[in-house]
Each structure stands twice: as C-alpha cells, then as structure tokens.
Length: 167
Image (tube, one colour):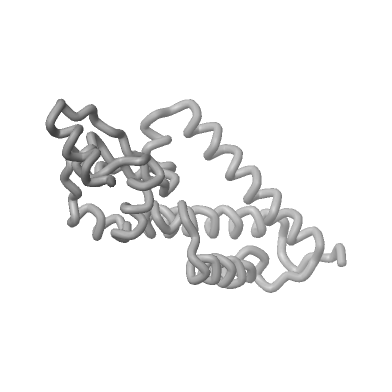
C-alpha cells in the first residue's frame, strides 16, 4: 500500500504533464463545453478522468503515488488560480474572454456556430432576460459558458411594436 513502484518526482512530472494537456484540451473545446453539461458532455468528462488516471500514476497502485498525483493537481490548480487573479492577460489566456453573439437586434449566426451555441440556448437566454430579439443591445457568451443579454431602450413606436409582439 505504501510501497511505490516509481520515484516520487515522477508522479509530480506525470501529474503536471496531464494537467497541462487537459487544460489545453478543455480550453480548445470551447466555452459551451465547460459552461453547460449535457449528459453526453458529462460522459466525456467521466471517461476523460478515467483515461487520464493511469497517466497520472503509471499503473502504480500505491497510496503514496495517488496522493502525490492528487496533491500535485491541487497545487497546480492553486498556482493557476493565483496567476489569473494577478494578471488580466493570464486570466484571458486560462479563463477566456466574453464573445459577442449579437448586437442591436442582430444575431451573429457564424459566431453561434463557431462557439457551439444552439439557437435554442440563445432563445432561452432571451426569455430569461425577458427580451425580444429587437430589444437586444448586446448578447455575450461569457467565459463560463453562460449567455448574458443586455436590453436596449426602445423609442416610442418601437417600444409599442415590441409590446404588441409579446401579446
């Protein structure tokens, strides 16, 4: 249980390499993958954890090896959190930046496709913001995968027309 097949430093190197590789893969997968899990996404995450597990320990089944790998992952996560809290540039690199999905009543379909945002998800965000498409001042895909909709103030006739559409 306490006898490890590998030297202690190899667990640290393995955990660091797996952490860096998975961080890059998750960032490349897009904001919506991280922000909102479908059952399929959850399955992929679970299988990803299983696939990466043996990479962390090199098939070493010792308690020490597992604890060293887990401790390294937690330490790396704390370092990344600390760096992103201190640097806007690193925050943008690790956490991402908001993406404009639409502006002034217009949806950018090419951006929706590129960011893997379904029309149904966008329409849900409009409903949650109690906003018609014509009232959209700005729609953003946030780094956490959520959609923020800012409503613009409509002028006299436009406001009446939007109100009539709702009824």
